[in-house]
Length: 318
Image 1 (cartoon, helix red, strand yellow):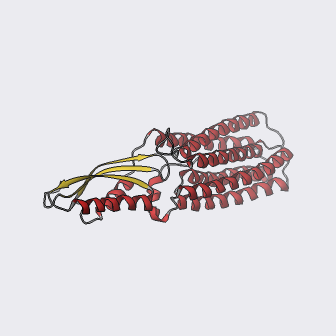
Image 2 (cartoon, one colour):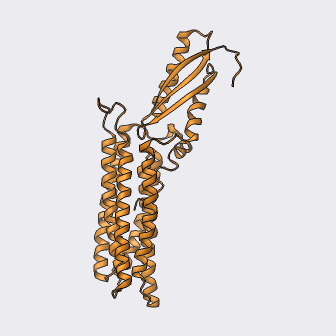
Image 3 (cartoon, one colour):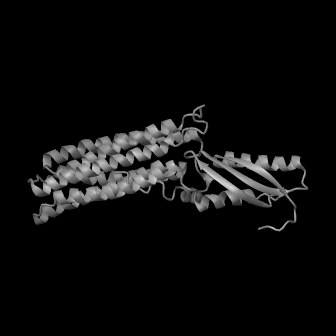
């Protein structure tokens, strides 16, 4: 389940952290992101084994569905790993601005898996409601579900820290997904506890509720992962950050026609018209422009191109 607001707040979060505090080097992002993805694959596969075993022994369709959900989580981690790997490829003749958008494509692929899991889980839950089966409530099932909740909370916190560190929307998605996994497994555990103490068979209903939760968030994620692929507008926070940083230089009198292109995390190409005094030495002006562009590239991994507009020093500003 990767139902997170994967890209919503992506740029806002970068502003809060400060570009300079994040890991923006593509090589280091690739290593950290790939390592996190492999850990996610291993942990989710272990949870699959435990939940499938517990589901078979107890006869619970919701536990089996939760196990299948973890299997899709592992598949999602594989997609994320592939996305980091492809995004790290250097620019070539066919893709002169790099391959960073593969990371966004990985998020879209994962969101499609969410919908598949949600549909299948809903189908299994409805069948269980219509034809309920007796459950074998045992200590193994309770233990597996309890351990799963603890593990998923740990994964949510770990991925949240790493997503902030490297500015990755994909890992932010995994973080929120892990948190929601813990909530979903908690719902399954609650249905077991209610049946144990009240005798009510809520297994199928638990599966349907979890499925609806998955589908709702999966649809939201599909919309959000498509947005940067078709060219979403930059956030106001990002625009203000860039303009304010350019304006910090004494010789800058004004900025206009700012254009931002996003080719993936750490791959922004920006152009701007910068007004500077017409009576200033052009060699000095050119050196200032070079300094600004180099600062953005080294600190923020933003490829900035400045067009110099000479204006009267005391001209009224709009």
